Structure formats: structure tokens, C-alpha cells
Amino acid sequence: MTKKVEKEKETPKPRKETRILKYLFTVDELREIASNLARECRELEQLEFEKKQVVSDFKAKIDAHNAQVSKLSAHINNGHEYRYIECSVFLNDPTPGKRTVIRIDNNETVAVEDMPKEEMQEDLFDPDFEVQE
Image (cartoon, rainbow, N blue to C red; front, side, top):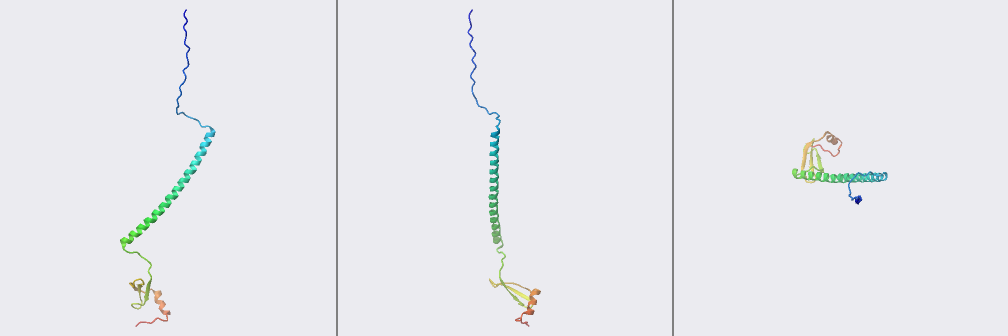
């Protein structure tokens, strides 16, 4: 009889490969991740707050410039603006019961108007008042 020599079956050596598979974190790893998350949340909140401040500052600057542009445009379009200008008021001029208002800066007559009752009563006590006839 002939003996057949059986080849021993060799177990093939496994080859290695890397795959993306589910990994369960340990309690310590979860604790570290939670700490990192809390830190990132704080930093994000701080950055959002700083952004709001910067945006608010720029908005205020832009609004100020827009207001100035509107004001200057109105000056150009209108050719004038209203200001407080000192005036001289002459009572009983040009006639009794009237008053004349004259700008001091250019001597322009601004108005000739009826005297208010209060000003008419001032004359009763003015020793220098002379009745014009």
C-alpha cells in the first residue's frame, strides 16, 4: 500500500486592513469630550458676544455718517438751514403796537409784527417811554 502523504492544511495567515467601525467611548473619554465641548461652547459664546459688539459699533458709526450725509444733502438741496441768530427788537416801531425785528449779523429786517400783550404792558412802567404823536 502506498501511503499518501497528506499535506497538512496550513491555516493561511490573515492579512490586515483598516476599516471605519463603531467605537464605544470609555467613561474617561466621554468625560474629556464633555469638558472640551463645554470649553468650546464658552469660547463660541464669547466670540458671538464680541461680534455683536463690533457689529453694534460699526452700525453706530455708519448711522452717524448717514445722518451727516442726509444733513449735508439737505443743505445743498435747500440752500439754507435754520439757526439761532441774535436779533434786535424795536418796540412801537414803525407804529405804536408794532415791533420790528432786525438781524444783528446783516441788519436785515426779519419781521414787522404786532406786539404781544405782554410787551405792550411793559411800556406802562418804562420811565423813558415817550408817546409818539
